[in-house]
Image (cartoon, rainbow, N blue to C red; front, top):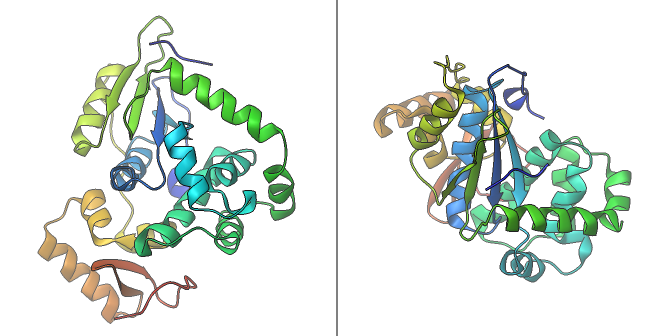
Length: 266
């Protein structure tokens, strides 16, 4: 396999020892949703040692799903994500996170209002974004993604392909969603030196950076016992710093008086 050439928590600092990761995802897949906290934790703890190129898989099945969840090009997640990418990878990552927050917890269809609100929250220039949504540039970008998708022989989603700095080395492909330590093992093996991981943010700072966060996501990020994590979240609620939200029998947390128009507070 060969290699084709928002948030402060996700900013990358260059290092002499880096791993480049191509991550292919389906925005409507439960397994891909479960991968989101793993991606976020990698970006935090290995900041400066990894770059992640997040690619909405351009397969027929995924693009058909995106089309089925939209009514026009203005609310097609695949096209909107590519338009967001034109304004930078960090903004595109934030954009798709805001989309996830509005679609997945309530299993709803994507709308133009959701697209626009997510773009605005991600710091995307809306005038340029709307122009890019109807630009032939998006078709060229999708075709390029498809060529990378095929070259890396992606069959199942989610999928990650890891490349070290050695241009002669082959990529390491991992299909599916695995425990966090599997990905850190691969990164450390490819870098070849002992890496001192960056410190995780506080729970409140993580919620602030990611807007709407599930209990399961916080367990993945912080790896605390369920009881200990619940006590900490209860403390933040009593301090009136966060709200707890119940959606589809799952607990989510957001900053107090968040503007997300989805949920009923409990």
